[in-house]
Length: 136
Image 1 (cartoon, rainbow, N blue to C red):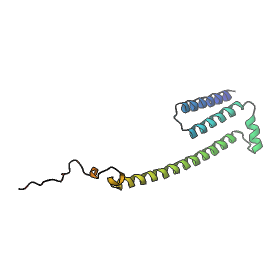
Image 2 (cartoon, rainbow, N blue to C red):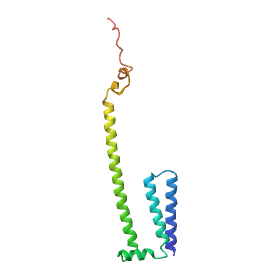
Image 3 (cartoon, one colour):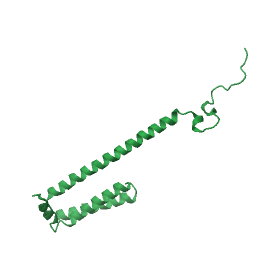
């Protein structure tokens, strides 16, 4: 009975932490929905422990030891999470490459090609201005 109460308290605590993180906008929408779903599943599994639903589902699937079903689901969730993060990393890497290429093109263009105006923007203030040269 103590394990069921502990499981329920931890699950509800994780749900509260997830909701607080979402309200403070510490998580993006995708991640917030993912962690909200995980915390709701944790609460559901904790709430159904007294009814032995986990035992029935694990025997239906063919798993002899019911807590192994939770371990299997956790490993599958982690595999999906790592795959999702890999896709996000690849997308961000492609965006970074495109951004670096755009910045490189912008820095190699002349100021007149960028539309800054009369072309004198490339002269530094310390550069000598054309004018009469002093005679010795």
